Image 1: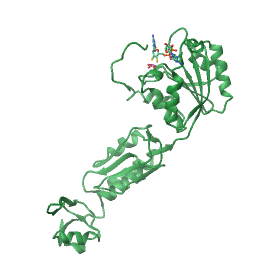
Image 2 (image 1 turned 60 degrees about the vertical axis):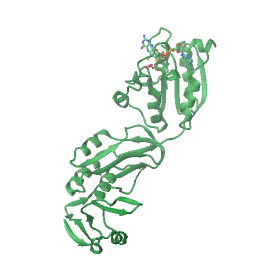
Image 3 (image 1 turned 90 degrees about the vertical axis):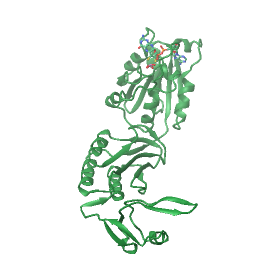
Image 4 (image 1 turned 120 degrees about the vertical axis):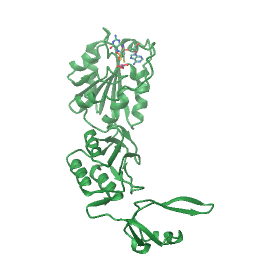
Length: 333
Ligand SMILES: Nc1nc2c(c(=O)[nH]1)N[C@H]1C(S)=C(S)[C@@H](COP(=O)(O)OP(=O)(O)OC[C@H]3O[C@@H](n4cnc5c(N)ncnc54)[C@H](O)[C@@H]3O)O[C@H]1N2
Ligand code: MOO
């Protein structure tokens, strides 16, 4: 550290915190260690009685914390993400629009393995709103070897960046299966629930068909739906092991490519995901109707963001896929 007159310190970094006391008004840190001294700071420093300061000497082989954080943030920033100016050494990555945030776990793991560098993000594949912070980064000391930041950039260059995929809106076809519903013995409980969840993403049910638990009837309802202008086809009920549960078989018979029947999410394990060409097809088990949060809430934003769902995406859901920690209450199934 080196002592310099404040006028000569512009562009240099403070070597220590500077406390300001204005009796009865303010007492605290006015300038933090590592602060990059700017011209407008000079009168403030003078008013604090500081005419000399200790500055940090940063060699060409090093970076100040603010520049370092900006460089890290820039190296991982993808579509739909903007940066905040550094504040106390931290730079945030902000969503520029509502959408699905994509974060590569391996990217974070490798960057956080670089000594003195931290990058913290939200979980991959969750819906975020415009203006929300999706990640934050900083270095631990006030300065760092440029080499470390070069390593970060190297890692980031070969990996998917942190990005936001914008939401679209969906026209949804819905096939409600269940002889009891078809016969009017009970009222359909799925429509209201699904409608509400779609509504949150500006999406709506444009066609709805109710069929009994008969495979042939379900198959022809699917065929009818495939001729509709829809962006998603949802089938409800008949997804488990009762002899009357015909839905997965009918979906298969209608020629839908099944990505997975069964997912490691509770509740929602009897969920089915498939595609007919580009058209996503979902089989929703009973719990979607009665449990507040299920696999449907996790997968729907992916569909609204028009992300093609793979088997591997679904397998990964198991980690964190236990959505309700309340012991199971009997009575609904
Ligand atoms: N022995 C097993 N039992 C259950 C299993 C299992 O694997 N083995 N899975 C459990 C899980 S998980 C769920 S979820 C439910 C299965 O739900 P399903 O999708 O098969 O639902 P259904 O059998 O068709 O109906 C269950 C229940 O809900 C009523 N229902 C169905 N659709 C409607 C509707 N549109 N509106 C109102 N009510 C509806 C239906 O009448 C039944 O009472 O099974 C667990 N059990
Ligand atoms: O498919 Mo069940 O839905 O886990 O409650």
